Length: 103
Image 1 (cartoon, helix red, strand yellow):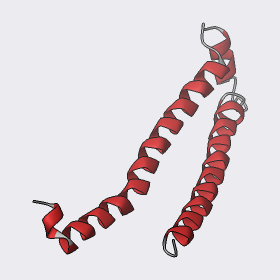
Image 2: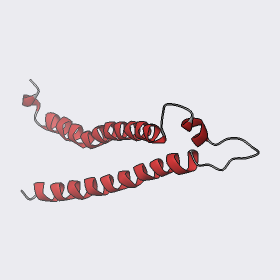
Image 3: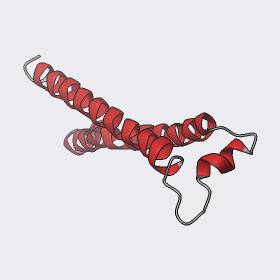
Image 4: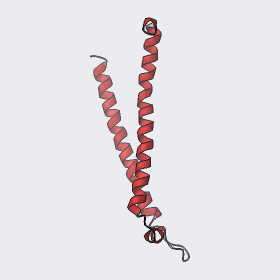
């Protein structure tokens, strides 16, 4: 209990900070895509990407959802691997200290 409570508290705090940082990152990507890419100012008579999207069957919302889905999938994959790494290290340390568990 003495070891478990600080670990749970630290993990809860770190996961909360991590989720907040990812939320900010995701919203910046969404803003970059929606505002800076599609509504970019035109230069020398070139049409903006918004005009190209308006002539297609796809929407800005569809593109943004696709990019957000990709970012969410990549983030969840990395998060699972990074947060699972300490468990693997602890498990291997336990196997070294308790070799009877391996056999």
